Amino acid sequence: MATEVLMPKLGATMESGRIMKWLKQLGETVDSGDPLVEIMTDKINIEVEADTAGVLTKIIYQEDEEANVGEIIGYIGQEGEVELSTVYSETGLLPQDEPTLHFPKVRRTPAARKLAISRGVNLEDVKGTGPQGRIQRKDVEEFTKKIVKPTPLASKIAKDQNIDVASIKGSGVNGKILRSDVVEKLNELETSLPATERIKVQGIRKIVSQRMAQSAFTAPHVTIMTEVDMSNVIEMRKQLLPGIEKQTNLRLSYTEIIMKTVAQTLRKHPKINASLNGDEIILHSQVNIGLAVSIPDGLLVPVVKTADQKGLAELTKECKRLSGLTRDGKLQPDDMASGTFTISNLGMYAVDTFTPIINQPESAILGVGRIHEKVVGVNGKIELRSMVSLSLAFDHRVIDGAPAAAFLTELKEMLENPYQLLV
Image 1: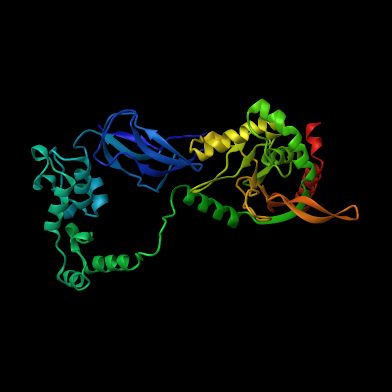
Image 2: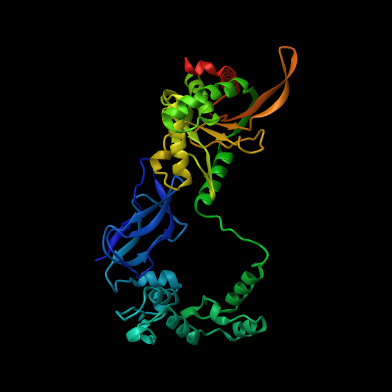
């Protein structure tokens, strides 16, 4: 009897997951503990293992499709347990079109079996060329070429356009190739420009795109900006570097100092450390700060829990640990859960100011530009100072302009007098 493969719950806040890749093919043998399917949730890819042995007999959710936690995404059964509904869904045939279609226990490779299902081929009709007559994928391909039957008009168009009908999947009864199938193939070939690189939006890139669009069009963003003199922060970092490096074997960065300052300031301005849930505004008791980390395919936001309660040495260890896990692709769902505020630091690039997009369900995000020298007025004198621009984007449904401005003003004052962090 077939065993259901369910969408697992991989984190406390997980409600659904996206199928990134089936690691076993339809008809392939599965052992208990084998990697079965790769699932994405909360922007993390996780391999899920099979908890039973058998054959992957049915795939309900295909790659890049999303299923809720607990939904059936596939079946593991015994050899020969391929349901006709699977065949119909994959070939486009209706039961009345092919009532005798079945897949007996013949010697064949998993790839040959999958291709036979997708093309509606009865493996009893295929002659195998492998060891002891085993049917291989190429045998199914050759057999398919012999039974391809285009309509006369489809055949003429294909010949005129120099298109091999064997490369076309027919949409007619029993896979018959219609005129529309040839036209579709022709359009496909015409849009495949050899000098153009085409990158499919999928995986993390697709999730990031969807969430950023949702945030941008759901939350009314307001962004306010200020400039901060970082001269005292730079001096304090120089003094603290040796001690923290000796204690942690890691170098204190400006990111940890900014995070500590933000956390302390959020504690004094709880209306900024908030989320909107339905018709309620939640003021969070914990200050959990997300740190936007760039990866090749997008952006992940690991979360430093209770950042306001950690010293600079502990923040240095935690930020470096989470950044390392992110870049190595080893983040777990809990590493990204429960954020209440996010920092996006582009200080390593030649970026002065930008407008970040809120990482919902949070209500605010701080964008940090590069530290660079500027000529500024100090006590009536012109001086060269190390300045940084801060951009606070906030959800105007939750936060009004005055509280946001008060938060940013105090954050500026704290960074310009950073020794307060040590008190």
